[in-house]
Image (cartoon, rainbow, N blue to C red; front, side, top):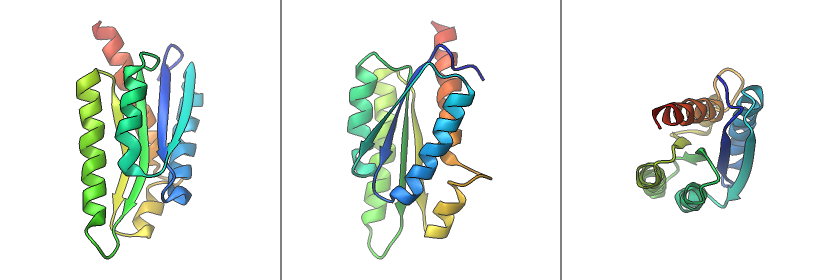
Length: 144
């Protein structure tokens, strides 16, 4: 996977940072291993704020892809559902409206244990999202 010609931004949510920092570690490792030319990281308060920052980055013309990382974990209220839905819908909308791939690396888990299992060494959704960003950006370049 060659990212040497690509400029990729990552937007990471601070809420549940003990999870999102590990997602970012996975994404950064893939970016470095793939030789991504530019990889800039931007932090937002939570997953709800990911789409608006992704939109600004995608519209800037400076990035070939945007990776969005967050962790929404179910608790006692329906807040989880609203945040997860808004993040997913918003990130998809940014991709479709701008033509810049915006990858959904947001965990939506029932438990803390599920989230931790998806941000570790065996499986890291941040790494998976960065791989998909590189593949998608390269594919779009080849179609131009």
